[in-house]
Length: 277
Image (cartoon, rainbow, N blue to C red; front, side, top):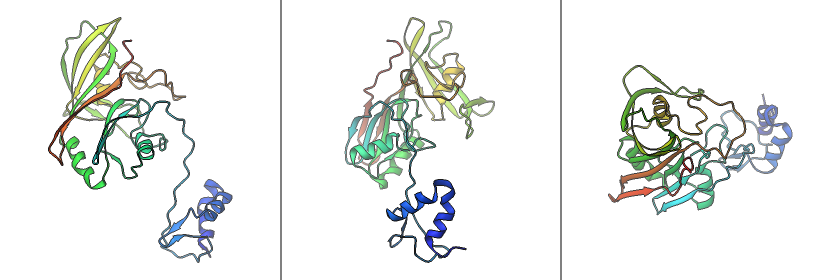
């Protein structure tokens, strides 16, 4: 159907980004084949492979910086701020911890070994070398990482704590909130009260599993929704981010034996929650 590569690109992408933008990308060498940039005048051939980096829409900058807790030739342990996604997903691409750290540290192959919810702050482990990533991911898969979280939520003097919560959590793609349902439990969290004042408590949360939104779901199920949670117990209407009201949930500690050096490692977040003042 097309005489040249350019004809194909204009027909395929012109409706989405405009023919003029396709022409501009061709002039700038943005479409690349196995032998380098293409001009668009090459004969069209079925099965020809081309690559390009799509343009990212503008993203609002999350006005908090990432702290580096530890760094060596194998790993980076970072303090991810609230509102910053761990890695690109959906509309969050350039404003993610991974994208920022790659730029700031000059480590193009950096990858996360696990993930924190966008609204949760605290420790995230990143792997510097691609060949090492599987070893560190396996620690999380096999539950060999000690994890401790901190949360601020309402205080209920009638609730006996500590308590271990076990339930079955289901998270459907495209649905904001996870839910609990009958069936074999796939999640477990221990909830401890550290202190309380003015109607709120500071809680230590020890997850034994890692289901999506697990701690937020379990705290809400106890009648203790985490302060400033935009999803539990009620999903807030979509709108501008309120950076002054971060979810009061912090990944405070990571502890594990390094799978490559066999060295015991323990890291503490330098961030602090503000919910109790």
